[in-house]
Amino acid sequence: MTKRPQINKRFFSLFLLLGVFSFSLSAQHPSWLNYNTNDGLPGNEVYDMIQDSRGYLWFATNQGICRFNGYEFIRPVDTSAMRGSAAFNPTEDPEGNIWFNHIDHSIHFIENDTVRTWAFNSVIDQYRGKFTVIERLAIADDGTVWLALENHGLLEVYPDGTHRVIPEMEDNCLVFTTVGRKVMHSVKVVNIPPSSHRGSKGMVFAEGRYEVIHWEGGKAVPMDGILFYRFPYINVLGGLTQLQNGDLLLFDAKSFRLIHDNQLQWRTLADIYVEKIYESPDGHLFVASHLGDNIGLFYYESPEQLRLGKYVNLLPGHYVTSFIIDRESGWWATTYDQGVFYCKNPGIEVFDATSGLPSEDVICLANDGEQTIFAGFRPADICAIDRLDGSPQILSRPPVLSREIWTMYFDTGSRRLGCSSPLIFLEKDKWKAIVHHKGVGRIPAKKITSDPRGDFLWASSSYGFFVLI
Image 1: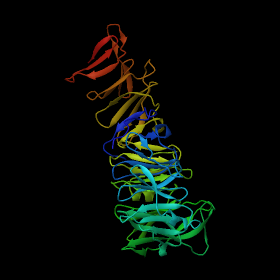
Image 2: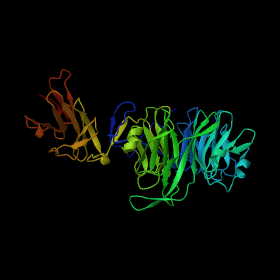
Image 3: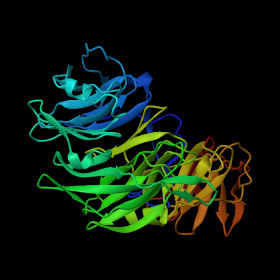
Image 4: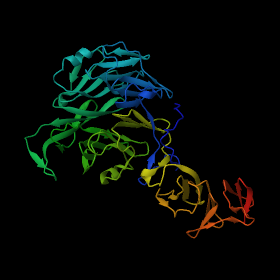
């Protein structure tokens, strides 16, 4: 799928190509392109997204659902009473139709770019007043519709309209995951006698027991019960992610739990409220968060790094609701307030003032042939950046007369860094000016380049060409 070949204008700083999908905890931050209502997105409040079997991206917003074809956002034809209202839980059925639900709990699907109302919305009407929101929506291979109803259970509606609430899930089904459109795991809450837990800051938490239900051959197999602590007055629902190795990553409020072979392996507290977790094909974890003081898109190299709390916030200050990696390895993140963010090449890092650079107005670049990149700025400053760990170091200010560094060149033979204007060289941490012997004075070089044989350097200026021996 082709994307808009455009870079956000506020990222004029410094780009470094680090290779295909290379990213580490020492990285700065990737270059994002922002799509919003100015680009045709129905609303800037985006709740979720999926990529369908044809490669199109679908976004569920506060103003309805839309499809992105790589060039523009297209809204399907919708003549329903809920046209233009908030859409949630986009999912694809075996025929390639896109399903979603509106805020009134009605279910709809998109067929041939036209929104059609589900024939069995009356089934949901029977349970109104018994649940608050539809937490998850999935369509099985046989057309069965699965609905996770908060505070009620897991509703299963068959293609002929018959239905049931799974008996084992009657207390409260929070989440489920699907593999090959089959419901594999669910989470329910079992109430236990009231008790309390006092946190480190004196807050009292209500205590509840969560059970993970594993489905095998159509039967529910409960796992070991796991205790969770809820923050009072904050309704933070949990989530469940099945990792590629089969482990389950269970999260709620500010905690994570890893379950392996039906056993709790570890539990850790976090400083973020988790909305969703996405695992990349190479095992990296991306966590979306839009609640609390610490919001953004959090990157963990592995589940172990998640356990240790070591992360990089890729979208600090943004209310991120979901994240996916498309089939061309592009990154997509949705937000509650600023639409959609897209990173075409995660292997490109952006260095700007937040990374320690003296300015975001980069004029020229040079490299030492090894691991150091030199950047020249306006005003006249030079910064050396270690390409391995990304750490910037501002060099001693060159004694130049102009307001900016016009050009730079690193001579690998003499290990000297040259810049202009006027032409000077940094050698053993000292700047030395180059003066023309015929009275021209200091040379205001516009460009410095090496001789093909490598014996000397050429410098061009408004006074002509100069040979630097």
